[in-house]
Amino acid sequence: MTLQDLERALASSDPAPVYLIAGPEVVLRDRAIRALRGHVIDPAFEAFNFRSVEPSGLDAASIVEEMRVLPMGGGRRLVVIAPAEDLLKDQVKTLGEYAGSPAPHTCLVLAAAEVKESLRKAFEKAVLVECASPWEDRLPALLATEAKDLGVRLDREAGSALAALCGRDLSRAVGELQKAATRVGPGGVITATLIRDLAGGGESGDVYRIASALARGDPAGAVRAARRFVEGEEKGQIRVLWEIGMYLRRLLAARSNLDAGMPAREAARAARVFWKDLDAFAAEVRRWDETRIASAFRRLLAADRVVKRGIDDGSAAIESCLWAICQRERGAPGPVTGARGREGRA
Image (cartoon, rainbow, N blue to C red; front, side, top):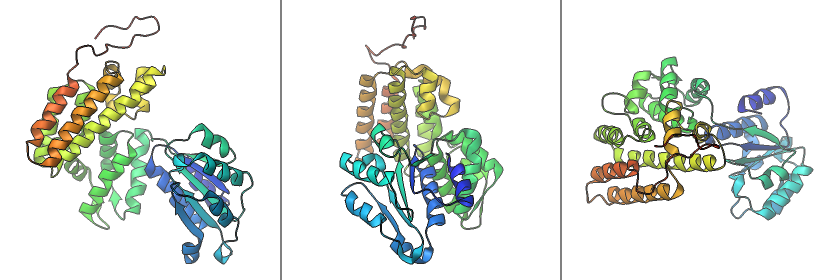
């Protein structure tokens, strides 16, 4: 089920004894947990009946014993374990045995960015809540809900502007939304103009254009966008480095999908590339292998060290990094050919 399915189910029925909340979007995972917490826990007994624990150092047997004890106040207990993908084999075994015969007065939630097969098998009877990245047309509605929780209002054009800037990356969009909410204050209205100003979307430059230029293999465009953004944004150099790092992580994920036989455009989509950049990214990812990606990461780390030292010219280091990343090195791979080898050369 989706987050919306969970919210509808909770409005009409009791919660399930075990949930597996899984997917890359931490914003959706957190919303699902908040929905369960609001439905399950009596605020008067929250200190006694709600626990959120990490796998590190977790005594699974003790948690199971606790979950089988009647909660304080006669209501329900909620136990959240996250990130569940870090659970050890013995912890999975103990908690999986509990999930096979759970206590009716306890709701156990396992939240994970990705679900390993061992976790899926151990909790096969759990209700699965999928928190995948939303499509762009769903983003404005989700952001409007987040804005309401922040005590502000997001107008329709601003929601569309955020969707255009961030694509399917809900976590990035919520980050921009939170910055805007801080600017307008409680009860304020977030407009498209404010979103573009905060994101550097005007003549001052747009940080998101860096990734778009990299996707096109356009170092000059990436350098221009980075230069404009750094000039107009405090701590802009750190944000640009982060943007480059996210681009390289998406390259690595897409390359792995490509090697597994996924079509290039689908590999780019699975790596959560902005929808307007999909075709360019899909063409560019064919020219990268793990060796070239590792080299690019080393160049990024070198630029990061220069910026954080604050002695040398950080902007020059970033621009040099962008040029180097886009420069196809000698011996770098050409496009991956199709099954019949008919795809054109670079």
